[in-house]
Image 1 (cartoon, rainbow, N blue to C red):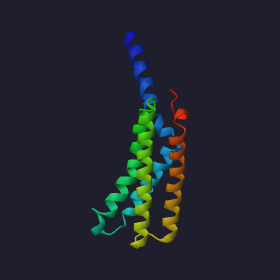
Image 2: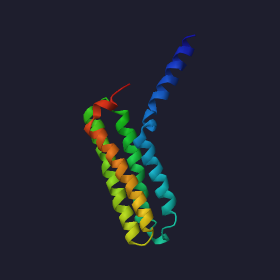
Image 3: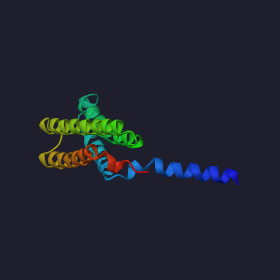
Image 4: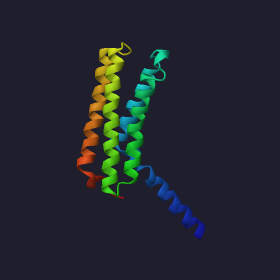
Length: 138
C-alpha cells in the first residue's frame, strides 16, 4: 500500500510539472516556433548556419525560457528574469523575421502574420513580467 501512495504522489508531481505547457503564451510561442521551422525549411542552403539557425534558435528559446521561469515561479526575481529572457528572445525572433523578408525569403503577408504573432506573445510575456504574483499558484 505504501508504494501505491508513493506512485500516486509521483504521478501528481509529474502532472503539475508541465503546467507551463497549458499557458496560452507557451502554446502561442510553440506554435510560432513550429511555423518558423516550417517556413525556414525553404530558406537557401547558404543560410543554414546563419539566418535559419538564428531564427529557429531564438523562437525555440522563447518556449524554453517560459518553461524554466514557470518552474521557478515561487522565486519572483527568477521568474521575472527568465520571462524577460523569453521576451528578449521573442524580440530577436521578430528581428530575424524582418531580415527574412528583406532578404526575399518570405513575402510581406508572411512577415506581417509572423510579426503579429510575435507581438501578441510579447504582450502576454509583458503581462507575466508585470504581474508575477498571478503565476505563483500551486
